[in-house]
Image (tube, rainbow, N blue to C red; front, side, top):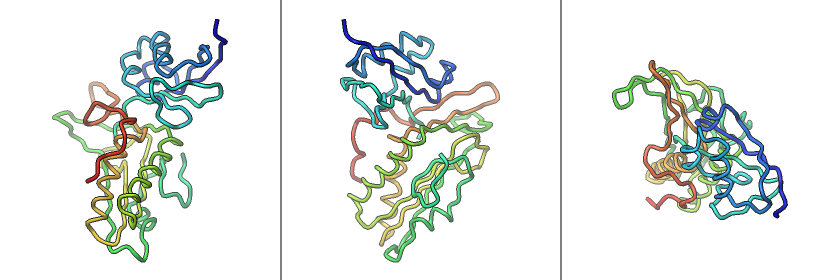
Length: 240
C-alpha cells in the first residue's frame, strides 16, 4: 500500500465561493499525479466539481500538466478559468487594492530610448450583452499573478528587444467607470509600442490568475475567459 502524505490546496474565485473555503487539506498517496488530485477534489467537493474539472492546478506557482507528480511541500493551488499584494515601490508588475494611475505607469516605462509610450486602460463598464452591471469584484492569486506578468514582459522582450512594459491590476470591489487594469508599453517607435501593449493584454487574459465577479441586480457570476477553451499551459501567444 502506498505511503500517504498530507497536502494543502488553495482555492480562489468561483471555487472558493462554491466550497465555502479558501483552502482544503487532503491525505493522498505519495506520488499522486495532478490528474488524480483533480479527481479527488471533485469527489471531496461535488458542489464545485464542474468548475474544478475546467480548472488547472498550479504547483509552486507554475501551471502543471495532468501527469505531473505532486510532492510533499509543494505549494498547490486550483486555478479556475481567469477573466482576463501590495505593490512594491519600484515594481513594474503588481496587484493592488489601491486605485491605479496611468501617469505612474507611464513614468515606470519612460526612458531616453523611447519615442512612444502606449497605455491600455481597462475600465468597469455598466452594460454587457444587454445586462446591467452594478459593480465588479476582482480577485487574484497575487504572487503567481505578478510572476506571470513578469513572464509576459520576458516574452515581449524576446519579440521587441527595445520595448519596456509595466502592468498593474486592481482587486477588490470596483464601481462603474473605475480602472481595473493598466498596461504601459514604451518603445523607440509607435508600431512596437502598439504591438507590445496589445500582446501584453491578450497574454494577461490567457495566463494571469485574476478573476472577476459580475454583480447584477438579480444575481452574480464569476466570469472566465472571453474566448475558450481556456488552457494557460497551451504555450505562448502567436507572433503578431
